[in-house]
Image (cartoon, rainbow, N blue to C red; front, side):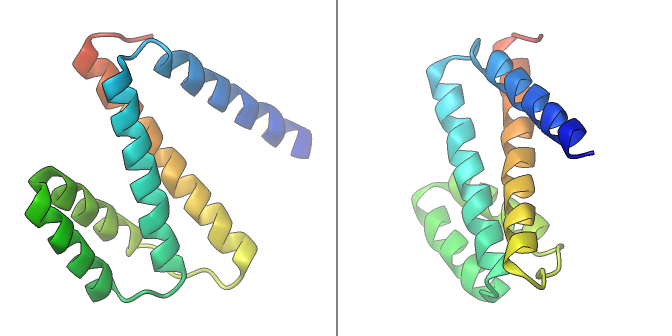
Length: 118
C-alpha cells in the first residue's frame, strides 16, 4: 500500500514538473505565489488563527493589490471550510494537500492561458 502511494505521488510530481517546465517564468512565479499563499493560509487555519484576523490581512493586502486581496479571500474561504485537525501530522498533511491542489489548479490555468497543454 505504501509503495503504491509513493509511486502515485512520484508520478504526480513528475507530471507537474513536466507540465510546468513549458510555461513562461512569470506564470510559474505566479503559481509559486499561489502555492505559498495557500500554504500560509491553511497553516493559519490549522493553527487556530481566527478567520477575522486572516481576513483583515487580506483586506490590507487588497489595498496594495486588488488581485492579491481577492486571491487571499478566495483561499481563506476554502481553507476555513476545513476543520482544524487534531494532531500535527494530520494538520501538516492537510496543509500539504491544500497547497498542492492550488498549485495544480494554477498550473492548469496557466497552461490554458499560455496555450500550452499536455
